[in-house]
Length: 253
Image (cartoon, rainbow, N blue to C red; front, side, top):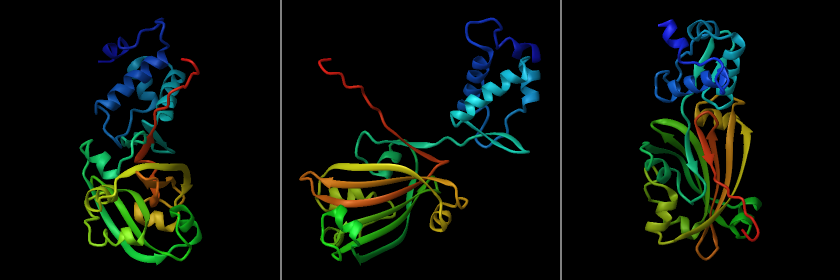
């Protein structure tokens, strides 16, 4: 078995040994040979199995860790990361709308639906007067029964009254607005940054206090350009990512 494994890496090839090893291990992670959260072979085991130096093994593992495919726990070893769900931001979609198309099961835990006076920040974003009534909706989004995000949504009262009895457990607010309220969506402005989990996020997402969380501020407009939905979305950093494609614009090209 050992001699066969050594033949999988070609010494003296144009591709460095650590790159060959990285690609081989990546393939085994992606095809499920090393399942999520399973312990990877130790550096010593990999050295013996593939007949390479510890420096080669460490370079390969270091690159895989940078790619997010593995993680290390001091004193315990190296483990395979859980694959992250992702959503493209090149089109305006609700979370369930995007995830369901990839075969995920989406459910929502509605923590609160209430009507409150808009504070200065929410009023400014929605283009209404401070103190005007808005619906405040708090939901935990569950991906395959695991909490992946906390969603805080504010919608002007006249429109939100039509959502009051809607199915917020299984449906996206976007689809309800378009299909039930006959309010076609136009575009959204997004701002993305990272925060550390506070008590509310720790409890809602079942993560450790201080864990990294992806925060997205999204203001959605209808086709007439009126702001109708303001949100703060908090995603677990270990379970989800947003993806964006950008093209280089060349004058006269």
